[in-house]
Length: 508
Image (cartoon, rainbow, N blue to C red):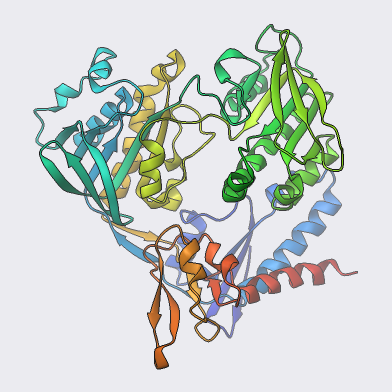
């Protein structure tokens, strides 16, 4: 850790540590209590970037020194800011049929918060079926702090994090519910065909990323690497990107990049456990995805993991008990076909029912790839707008985890509501008005309704940011053709200084 002073706002600190910074970093909190503005504290990740990817000390140390130098240069150009502050309404909405939702609602109510349990069709168990499974919603009926809304539909969601206003249509008419946190429970659609035309239910050697994670945990505990279908040795694995069409590929690119990065880390873990394992990635236009995680993909390539860039989405077929990947590579006229012992679909299983529609209303991600019972609220340090997403199934494994998982989610929701006021980092968009032409491109791409055009002098319009809605995703910055959008803490000046600092340290 290195501390220094600057003429631009006083003391600054650069931390050479492990994982990327989080709002709940205890050292950052200690520094703030000592009077140092948290936005003048820069954390440099030297564990994952250096210690874990370099086999010898010398290159790892040289790279760490360059990263710290870049962090110093960026920190010198940071401005002291104040966190955004959100008031959180002390009520929760639980959406979806399942014993999971019933258990979570019960736990939240026991902590003294009002809960609305919305019984809308999602394709899973009904509340009556949940009762048969051991979680009786009618046991909650007599409670003053739980209201069950049956046979209804969410028509709209407005407001901001901590103060959601949910419009619900019931048999008696429309109602508005004011809530601070929302839990959406949705089941997997177990036999739904995915976009590459293959059913997950009829081939045990075709799995999703979440299932591979469970397999990896078993392998890291000493289990044998064997094929799910027949127990044969697991020697050849293919990771296949899920893409329906060009339009979907462009729209889902950021999410797909994240899941491909996750899959690469899983592949590296497999290689460390079994260096002789043959691992291939089949990705539609791989270059663009790999550029977003270059250090990770370069490390994988050095480990012998192969990346195949395809001209079209791949196909997966099953013939005589064999799992085949058919792919047309860039620059090749004819597709090739290879057999794999296990195929992992990146971004695979679909979910059914209400969840995609509700999450779209909330401007929240669908959480593809999460395991049963996992939830987006694991990013609770980022608050994720107070929205939690559960993927459930009727499997025995998922049923066994219902109680503990429901309690974990409920506890995270209760923590947010109990704080009453929550601070969120001010990493939001900022308009440089002298550059803005009022074209409206930023308003058309913003998924969070955080940008409007307002009239200035002489009838000219400029973009204006609602910081309470902005999530700092950066889409507006990419869309702006005049360079009028910046992200606080990540301005072009700051990032260029960081890169030039690293280059200066490395030298020629």
